[in-house]
Length: 260
Image (cartoon, rainbow, N blue to C red; front, side, top):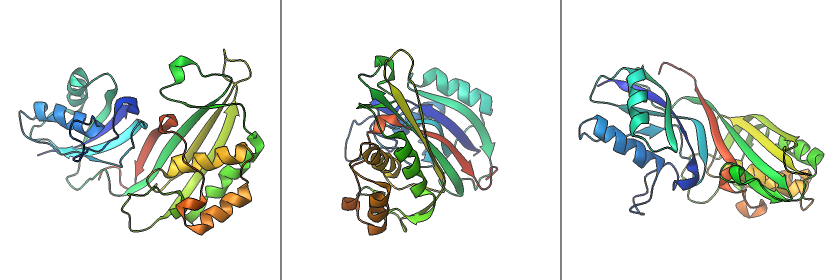
């Protein structure tokens, strides 16, 4: 059977995350939707899909990567076209390719890039409410940008991990951590925070916790030094609450060996 690598985009608003929830029968998940379509394409044969990682409830993707074996030899371009004809409007197949049998979307990930968008001001435009979080008022932009550099390098991020994860180590290497601000047209006195972070891996709710820390600093209820101490504590109770899921998007996944 050929092994396929598929790049997906989805609006996570109406999904209970990526992973099929065995304990919550009937929960709508991205994995469940994809596997249901592949079941039809494989003429009733169950096709299990492996993703680069699990996005949480409400988190979006522009470049989620999955791999699977299909008991049919379908040209990659035809696979994308056929899947998009069957998939609901909030999921799309962007690219497909046949890869080596040993390729696994979860293994040999070199880096992942996430983007978080936060609208600030007197109100939020209705069309942005699904893909951008919202905070009334403003943030100290210089303080936020300075605090973003705290995450760079190889650190133990146990303080930023949500409970329920199962990982061998909470150490991760962050190569990019950048915050920028800009005005939002049509909304007076508005600003938009866009935070991008790239690293070799992320713990459960880690990016949202990073943003939660930046928001705390921007509001003046914490400082970069306080976040430094909280990070060193390796204790979730020492860190601010995570930011809402709807502002987070998985942008890209890169691999050590693109051909598997």
